[in-house]
Length: 413
Image (cartoon, rainbow, N blue to C red; front, side, top):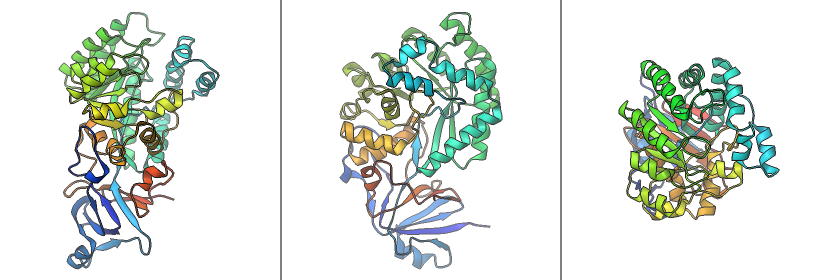
């Protein structure tokens, strides 16, 4: 039986359809439909038009209306870089950082990623699934329905596969869409006897074939940084994965410049972090289709500078914004708050900030998503306000009253 609903009227409807993927966006470039309605049939947006004309045309469908309140509609948000599959805590790391230790010093002393690796290895697959679902629910409450999720806290054959299987199971149990990414090349674990290249060969020869056999991920990531993997190791490993058909992304320029040029040279779909990206790195994005992904949650968690978002946009880059939600450097996990703070710091227009968590985040994942458009799966947020700019003006404190995801209406308390 057909399931059809008419939503509206919306005081404002921001579709993001037709917005540019590259370079700056002025607020007046965003199409704003007034007093619009959205007809959803079997989870697909069938028609967007003036609400009064839709009520006349579809007289017998179920209606979802704000009554005397004012609603606005925007596309569902997308978080294109997270690590929400983990076990344990890194509160000790946080305490050390605020007492003056650096991220790299903490890792060298035995803390950092390996703390989470040990806890994640000890956790069962079901425990990991429940942890993912708990964090996904928090994202859903904030209007985020497409979430990239990385492995990278297993760092051996068995536990990398355990993480990816947990992500796959969580995706089946959630109305959110979880996009898995293989991050076996997070760091070489301390219990591995051999070189970085030896470790990467284990990932390629022992883990990747099972990933492909079980269809656990079509994307792969790598941490290119001092204490992780070098530029030469990144080139070799990434090209091997590219040959096998993976979409590639990289953590680069978090503490030192130079990695963004490697990512753009290889043709990664995105290069993420970029806190130390220099003018040469910014220039490399202007000549590339690689998406620059800013991670303000990591800057806030580590007490360091933001990615040069304004300069990247002015150079013509495609800039996405993601939370980097993880237990170590970015424990907040609140994408809209982080995006708002980045926008205020880097002087991003509201249109640029919204694009960073909708259309441009979708492009970082190479998904046909991020817009509120006819003939696409219904994915949109409903806010009780008369001006969509309030989402960022209130710096993430305004939450959706509900989110429509296909045939589902996710009601927020």
